[in-house]
Amino acid sequence: MPPTKLSTVVLDAHDAHELAGFYLRLLGYEVRAEEPHWVLIGPPPGTEGTALAFETEPAYAPPVWPTRNPGDQQMMLHLDIEVDDLAAQAARAVAEGARLTEQQPQDDVRVLLDPSGHPFCLWTRSGQ
Image (cartoon, rainbow, N blue to C red; front, side, top):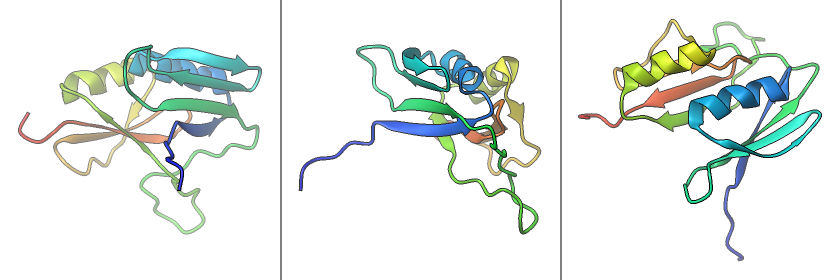
């Protein structure tokens, strides 16, 4: 079987360029390609990380997290982003346009919603 590699995670949004801008600022990524309704971003050359792409979807409905009612738009995935300083990076994410969720599952994780409502987690290794 030939080797495979996960190269990109694609997120739908009402506005691909707006959401790409949020993650560019949050992650320090750069634009690799863009079209009117699609943007690909990734880590700068020489650094590791998975690329993200964003696609404009006019019928996009943000997920509900945590899901409370049958019929709520289910979260299909979320991004885990490792950070060194959880409090500082959570504050920075909020300053860039994220929202901290009411429910926080554990001390070394902060769940936030990006400007399109996708949940993502900032986390730090325990004991750091």
